[in-house]
Length: 263
Length: 226
Image (cartoon, rainbow over all chains, first blue to last red; front, side, top):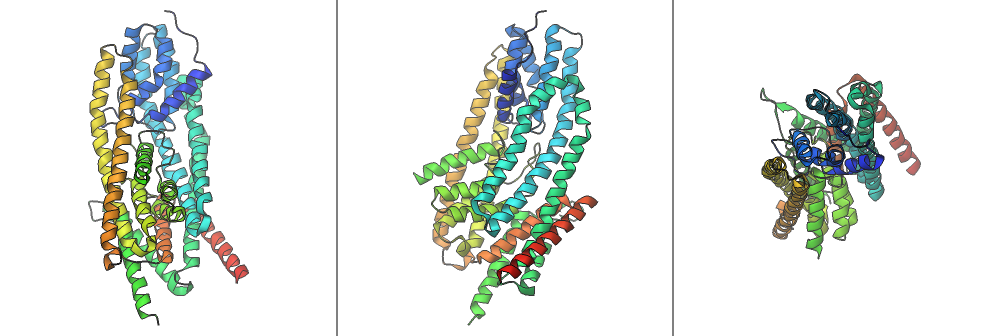
């Protein structure tokens, strides 16, 4: 069977840009399936000139897919590479694509969630929110946005090429200690920021500082911390938003009381 | 014009939250200043954006997880704050913003269920040989999300503004000082960050390091300033 030329940088860039729409039709049945298949379409068009064959491969990729949006481009690159084997008619290639995608989406999902959702984003968010609350203004906001996207969108753009270059050998790439170290570094950064916020909150105090301020701040942390703990054996948590609302009402009452008693 | 721009911002915020890009334009820390600038109150936007960012720091947008729409909450909060001094109606503002956040969550669930029909239709059409069906499905999904986002932003903001006129200058508005709000938001940030980063021993050591260094710097700055 005649197979189209290897994927060029333009095609891979196009797939990476299409990956921005990965979740545009996110649903409870196939999750990111439609977005994943649509992103791969430029490659499928080149590899499968016969429309009926292309439709069959497109249909195969429309099935359930769920991964981290930023790292999903790695899976797209791998799928693109393996589609070459499918186009050449290698026996069992279609099953191999399906199996590898099944494994890869979970691995990339877990890795991306740890790196970005539970690492990079809360670390930057805590730093930016603290800086903005302490007078950092629009600079803190701009820095947050640029740093966040500087990493995540770069990963997204490079992911297709990384996956395409590695093909089925992507497992070796993902076992590289770099990923573990990156996740640990993000955690450490976030923890340092968390400690700094605690120190700044207690130092700044309330109503001119002093021990009263320290007490009120630590009391607020304790109150919100308790609200965040699971309740009973069901493990249900009180909404942090409702706990925060209660705290605001409490502080409002304190402010009211202070204003009422002041001369 | 102001409401039209709010609708456009609402559409962008909703779509960025999960359907397209996830560039964090939908995070409160970005939405607040954007909405504040649109409404002529950028400083209020930065402040309330930071407050809601701290409160909603713990949201994990993983898989099929349900979570409040933090962007819509920040948008509605900033709209109320821009009507007056936000600290004068803090309890009302926070309550309305959280209500909007819950409504945004419901809207997301609704859109995801609706998307299920689109996905099934796309698969049927592709099976029938229509290779452009996924592209059309994507366009429909984005347009639907943008329309729902715009409607939610304008609708919630309008309700919040009308309510604000009713409760303003009453006890229900719940006055609080900026200082108190800042402290509550910093406490929320500490709790959220702790949830993420205090699981490991190395994280606890880093936490302690950050605490000591920041306390030292703050004391030094305080000593220099006095």
